[in-house]
Length: 174
Image (tube, rainbow, N blue to C red; front, side, top):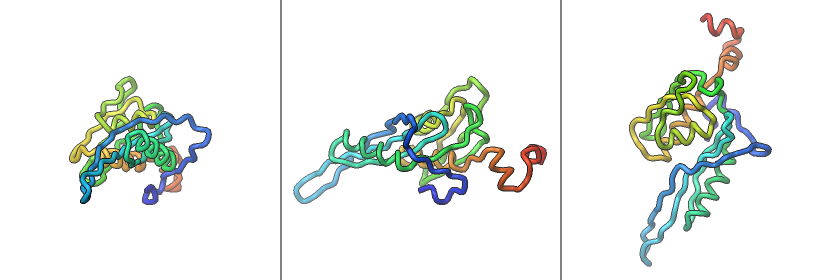
């Protein structure tokens, strides 16, 4: 899932104090010749609230096992997000499917100004001061993936300096 991002640093779940957050549970129906077969899909975000976050999807015939599967899937997809204190290093836009998400760093004390699935992801990352706008599709699956798209494009000043082959001071002067 994260292969297209150069700066995506995959993280092993061992030794991390991960907290899981349920984004949503959907009841899905499959119509067969014997009638309707009901199942559930759950989307979960796990994070240590210090820059490590992952998302997962679980499907099952009952809600509890769907959530458990989603948590296990999320722990397999952990990535480290560069933070600047309790905010983001810069503004970033992300998109997935019909969902568009814009996340903007905010001044200290602003709080998390975000709704729904975006708020869940940002809180799991550990961002405390951020503004966001979600546009287009409100489907939680796509909104979560669009938020991850934006977060995975974030780069801190050290990474930018290393990629350009210049000093940290030159990054801020240019």
